[in-house]
Structure formats: C-alpha cells, structure tokens
Image 1: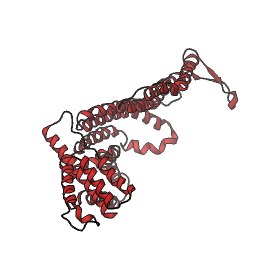
Image 2 (image 1 turned 180 degrees about the horizontal axis):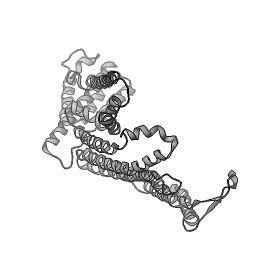
Image 3 (image 1 turned 120 degrees about the vertical axis):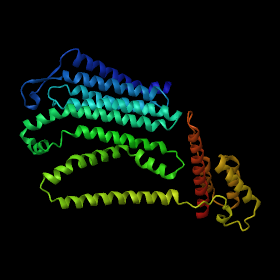
Image 4 (image 1 turned 45 degrees about the vertical axis):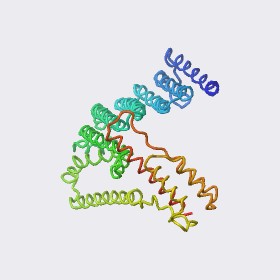
Length: 395
C-alpha cells in the first residue's frame, strides 16, 4: 500500500495542481488569448475549454487512483472505462463550443453514453461469469440492443443537421444525389434491425462450453467477433434494402454486372466459411483417440504388457474421467527420466498436465449445464493427454 502511495504521489500532485488551475482560470474567471502572434486581430476566450479539461483531468485522476489503490477483477475494466469516459466526456462538453458544427453534439453524446454502457457491461459480465457463464452472452446481447437504440436516436438527431449542412455547403454538393435518392434517411431503421440481429447472434456465446464441437465453433466464430458481425449485418441490410434498389433502378449501371458481382461476393463468402470450418474440423474434430495406446509411442518399450505402462494407462483414464493428475504426473515424470529424455523436454511435456485447469461449473446452473460442463472438461483432458503422447512420439 505504501509503495502504491509513493508511485502515485507525483501524478496526484500534478493532477490536483492542474485541476485547480483549470477551475481558477477557465471556470471561475474568463481568460482570453490575443491572436496577434499568429497574424490575426482580436482575441479568443478560452472559457470553452474549462469544463472539457476539468472532466478529462478528474476522470483520469480517478482512473489513476482505481488502478493503483484498489485491487479486484473489476478494477481493470473500471480503470479503462474511466479513461475512455474522460475523453468521451471532454469531447461531449467541447461540442458546446460555438465553433463546433451543430451535428457534433449528437455524435459526442453517443460516444459518451455508449462508453458508459460499455464500462457497465464489462463490469457486470465479470460478476455474472462467476455465477454462470450463460449470463455473460445474455448481458452482451442486452448491451448491443441498448447501443443500437442509442445509435438510432443519434441518427434521428444527427440527420436533420447533417442534411441542412450538406444543402448549405457547395463543397458538399457531391452528396446531394445520396440525399435525393433517399439513401441517408433510413439509416435509423437499418441500425435498429442490424442491432437486433447482432443481439440475437451474440447469444451463440451460450455454446462456448458446450461439449458439441460445432456449437463451440459457432460460438467462437461469432461471439468473439461481434463488432465485425455488427458491421457485416449493417452493410448487408443497408445494401439489400436500399443500395441495391438504387443501383438497379436509378444508377444506370448494367444490372447483369451487378448480379455477377453479387454472385462473386456470395461465392467468396461461402468459400471462406467452408475453408474456416474445414480448418477447424481438421484441427479440433478429426483427432485420433490415442488415449490408452501409450506403448505404441515409446520407442524404448518393446513389451506392451509392461506393468509400468499398464498402471500409467489406468492413471491416464483416471485423469481423463475424473481429473486426478497428481499420481499421473509422478509416474509420467519417472517414465520419461528412465527413457533418457532431456530434462528441458520433460519439463515442457509435464507442464501440459500441471498447467491444465478444468472449466469451473456455474455456481447457479441447470442440471444439463453441469453435465455439459463435465463432458466438456473430459474432452479438454483428453486433448491434453493426446498432446502429451504426440509430443513424446515426435521426440
């Protein structure tokens, strides 16, 4: 604790002095800077920087205290969330400056509120994960729905201001056809539908610890790439519902070229999906069950009925079925030493077993979930044993 206090003493003094200076010069009184030094006449009032800088400093100081003074699983996401909020909050208050376009406020408001939701979601997920891992993808699904709602409301506030800016600015006349074609206004509806679809797909995370390998693959492929999935959903829906109609009916492009391009894109997507599934099947599904065939991989053993190997085979089965590994580690170490294997290789192989950890069952769960957890751990232990035997065979 004393060490932590010493490490943050200097930053604390710097933050407190900076906060006092900002409050005194930019909030409690007006501070102006002349523009003569850049060749312009007049002066600029810096009061608009007061609240943004104060928000930035206070939240980053809070993140510093959380990161160095507190411990626990939720401290890291809390500290990172406060750092993100410091920037989002500063931008939110900076958008009140008269020089910022009117459409800047909705964007900064979305960044601020979504940052708050993100921090809450990460903290809640950590707590829910300890109770039952099924709650985590559900929390993520709700979070995506809320962010989608914020995005739709942001667009409703942003679009009128953006439309008036484009119409009033001659340099943005290139975007006029997009407005006239009606391709910008329905973005709100696409955000809602894409968010709802992504929210449903986030529930594939429920199969993360399922003994069914294909469900685990789906959970890993979709659940770990939700930002990419959300972007693909939005792009696909926007194209199918609006852009496609515009290209076919109003753009003047040959429809046959568009159809060929669509089929190429579809075939490419199916090919990538097939290749990824094939790679996963080759690496994770098509595995030889070599548990119990120890004597075939030990070049030093000529008789398969060696009592040591028979006992070791029993220990392997006990590890795979029940997770008992202490005696297995002892006998495996002795057997490898007797085979004159280098110590470094023995350590590397034994560490595969010693570092293995079962996936903990949920504190509150369903009977079928406990059974799935047991089968999932059995599969993981069998993979560890297979990796160990394969390593010995290669060596």
